[in-house]
Length: 345
Image: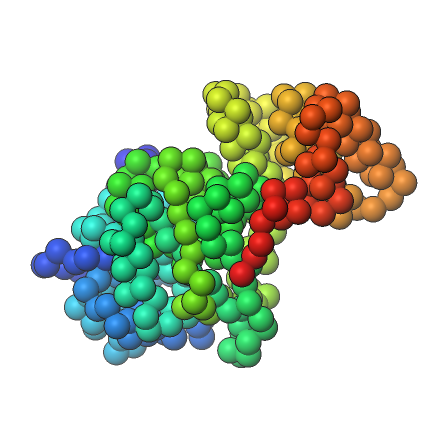
């Protein structure tokens, strides 16, 4: 974590006791969802926690939450401008006192027994590093949209974390040592969660509670909607880094960032970087990632040229791994769930 980045942060409120849980709550704009999100934390049945509220540049501080901002469990960390999600999370990590650390986004809703049930599972299974929960998706008016994508078991979460999040990121609650060992990488300004999760699941097993203990809000002004190109590009790079690690190879992240510095500043369309990733993964013999990326490239732009390119990558992967052809074909035709035999909740 860069000390230069954290130097201007001002710790406004001090918490005198040692809480069981430290919650990371970062916001960079004032919306109608802020107060309900915080209020859902304050209503938890397991109340032994602190909330590290990171004001990422609004200047509103705890005043943004009205009377709820007076709760003594809140501690404010303030930045003069938006430093990005990983810097904010690392600032919270530096101040956290809890045995367990939890994520919470500023526009979602945690149901009352979330912390109680997650801590109970971590106590019952000391081998677990992280625990997610199942979630329901809601819209900007609190209407239910349906169940969120969730994989429950340790094997399923590990396999799928090579490609994307195995459950909703802000439902994470985990052991302190996981976060201390794996601080959020500031290069992934928009999408640090997938990079963090894929690295964590390589070192500790994780599970998701099958109960829907969280409401994940989808709306047009959320960060992932407004900066989708940067988010998708960051996730694509994280996939390549994960493939290298899981193959026992060095990440070589600085070299990769230097090679792609122009794209890192201004990401191209997914129809450009996904075919590149498919070819690079094929060259490095990460065959499942190559075929997965070829499949994603087709979804991004379906033309005769992209079909030919995807088929070339897939045919090359099949030729390179005769014994793995069944799984590679499942990946191309059905994606990671079919290729790895996974079942979502």
